[in-house]
Amino acid sequence: MTVAGYAPIDFRFVENLTGALNADDAFIFDGLGAVTGAIDDRGGNTALDVGSGALVAFVADGGIIWDSATADVNTGNVDLGTLIAAEILTFDLTGASLFAGIGASLNATLDGIIATGAVGSA
Image (cartoon, rainbow, N blue to C red; front, top):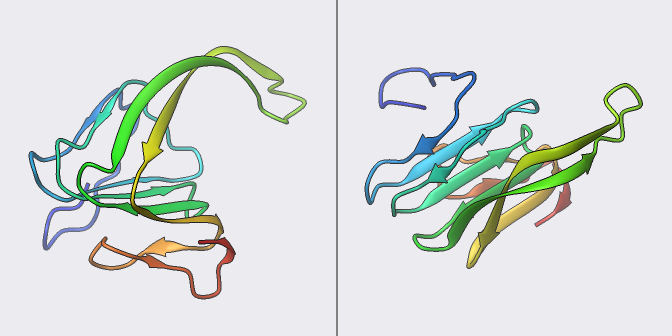
């Protein structure tokens, strides 16, 4: 969370995230970030950065639908194996600016994507 004039605030072990009513919100997850419950942006534009620039999106008001599901997840890691019946967060985007790859970021005003030097697809 970022409050004007202050540094971002990091959270750990968060179950649910709720944005400000009818305001613009940014949800930024580092490589190990997770939410075990629901995300509700409560209206307004939404900026999203998942995996330190692996997936970056700016979504206009009403263009994102959050949901959760249970699925088996193959981690690709021999030590972790498959996560059985893992709770996963899903989202549908409409009318979004989206980048998938490595190295992108949200701009300073959280209403656009900076992909200079990034590798991926916008």
